[in-house]
Image (cartoon, rainbow, N blue to C red; front, side, top):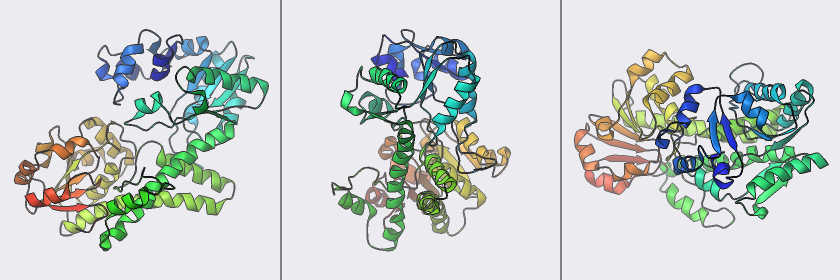
Length: 447
């Protein structure tokens, strides 16, 4: 919405949320304090806010005056009932649709922005048509393909914009209205139009394919560690094949983020719903491999620390699921920490952008142990050198660039010996660290 406001100064954009604290943060006079850390976003917000970009808790008023409403609410994986652990929880989508229906006095275009299971548009349309005030609604699917950390860049010059709508004359008019918004800065040939179902499925499929590439390369790291192969060399070799390409071939402790796991589980659930067991099993394996990689990393740490981490201090560098974001959803660090806490480890966490409260919230959300137990086992430190002081081992869980530039001699001198580093992102120069005296284990290489 901030990018649309920046690129389309003639369009009024109002972002609404029921959470007063969050809206207050978006309205903070200092744009560096907005609640989402994303390179370049503060500057975009600063340019448009107060001109044609507004943040408000008055949801009804914003719906009432809008010609086009984007639904961008959370769609987490269900934690209860039918489809638990796989299906998307559409509670907030339905509440949103009912509010739009209740408030609307004229015709509106409703745009699905949240990642949704196929055929959600029909459910939204059903609610709007049967609970409204006689207003007419057109439902469009406009999934987002940006990546956190490069989101502003991705929005400024996207590979494509995808808009799905009905094939009726009214549906095509609605599609054109949204095309006209994006055409203010995006070449028309990059704006793809489809039917609603193809658009919804394309979003799930794009994330499933990207996650599959990560799990595929990670599945080979274990084999590399048992042989003389180096996963970095393998990835470079296959990435030069134009049919494969180099992206998403970076071996790691596993993928995280708000979309990959949720979308694949959604795909699995939809396939099972239609009785497509083989299709479901195929995509579920991507998740199984990702979970295996996180457990394997934690177990490797335990094994290399003489089969016990009880009472040992382990420093985590990074908690966010990737660099250049403060988003921690499904971060590998959460699950590695949880596994090590089972073994009574003492964990010290440093992340340059993730706040202490978020780290404890992530652990508490798992429900594995009490909040008090989590706080007893995990300490959040605001200085990386302090976090590593007296540690038995360091685990690199996020690929923050700053980690590469630390004074590793100083860190080595402050640690218990033998000083061990488990590089879950293949970020650091292992040979340089070994010359200092560290014992280094990188993903997918024989130590």
